[in-house]
Image 1: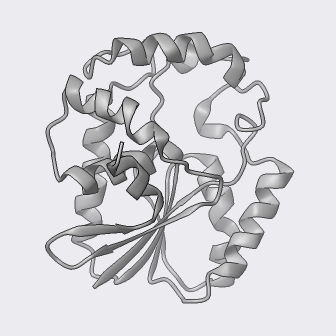
Image 2: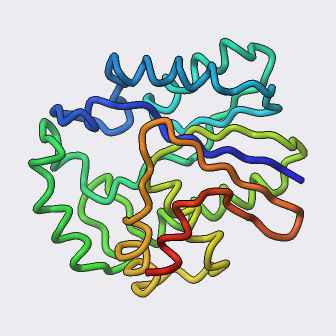
Length: 212
C-alpha cells in the first residue's frame, strides 16, 4: 500500500488579502511560517520522498519538514496552482480585486478557454494533475509527502472520486459546482492510499460533496 499525503501550503500573502505580483513567488506570511513549523511537528513517520511545487509558498511550507528529515530526497514537480487568470493582468491586485474576473471565468466554464498571457486552461491544468498522479503511482516509495495548492487538491479528489480522465466543459462545471465546496485550509493534509489499482482519499469532507 502506498500512502501519499497531499498538503496545502501555509497562509500566503495572497491568502491574507494583500496585493501580489507573480504567483510563483508569493511567500508565506509570518502566520504561514508558524503553520509550517507546527505542521512539521505533527509528522512523526519519516517520509521516503518529499515533493513540492515550483511555487515558493509550497517550498517554504515544506522547509521545516525537510529540516526534520534531512536525509529524505526532495523533488520539484509541476503541481503548481491553477492560475486561470492572466498573471500579467493581475499584478498588484488582491483577492477582492479579482473576484469579478473569477466570477466571469467560472460562469463561462469553457475547458479550453485561456484568460490571457501566462494563464492556464482547465484542460491543461487537469491534465497535468492527472499526469502527476500517475507519476506518483509509478514511484517505488511507499510514503510520500506532496506540498501543493488548494485547487490541485480539489482536482486530485475529483479524479479519485470519479475515475474519469475526460476533461471537458462538463467536468469543469463539476469542479466549479462540487469541488469548490471542499474546504482546503492552509496546511490541511489530505491523506490518500494507492493499492496498486485504485486510489482512496481518507477524508470525511468528501462525504458531504458526494451527497450534494
